Image 1 (cartoon, rainbow, N blue to C red):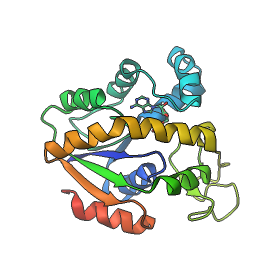
Image 2 (image 1 turned 135 degrees about the horizontal axis):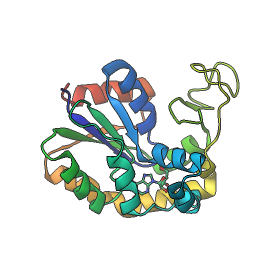
Image 3 (image 1 turned 180 degrees about the horizontal axis):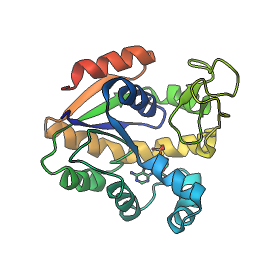
Image 4 (image 1 turned 120 degrees about the vertical axis):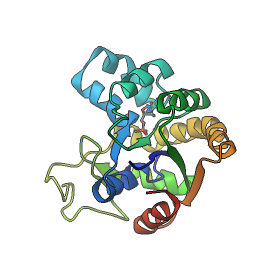
Length: 211
Ligand code: AMP
């Protein structure tokens, strides 16, 4: 079985887009805590109600709530995952270490310029489930506002407005340094330059991971 991948990178650094390519071409399963949380909000579950406002403000949901949701959606014995959006802080990184136990993994850090990220995120559009992601400037759908793959209407995430994006960046900058250092000290970290075009980022990832 392939190693699991842990994608680390600021919002908008292309983790979701690259995950979609790797799922399609390389047979990984994508697990995004952001997508799982948004699904709870859509279904109006108790959990969804609890996290709605925190997410709308770009703050982090409590570690306990996120880890339960994550665990409920993992089948590590039979699947190689891409973890997208988890871990977000050092505590979550240590929790994930326990969850993965002896399952092998590589952490991939998507390095990107912050101003470019704001531009990427405010131009980002996607399907409701977050599986198909476009950028109005660099990767627009063939027909305006419509997904090329599913034909459904594209949406803008509520937290992709400039104000909320800036606060998400602040959260990222204050919590992720430690996480990157953690994987680096374990010799589990590879870095890719995420400022490059999509295909080049993909090629760089493929080169750096064990398949
Ligand atoms: P994302 O789709 O990864 O950008 O996540 C969107 C939002 O979901 C974040 O701004 C947080 O509010 C919440 N979230 C996602 N993953 C986590 C996590 N691992 N820990 C805490 N909150 C999270």
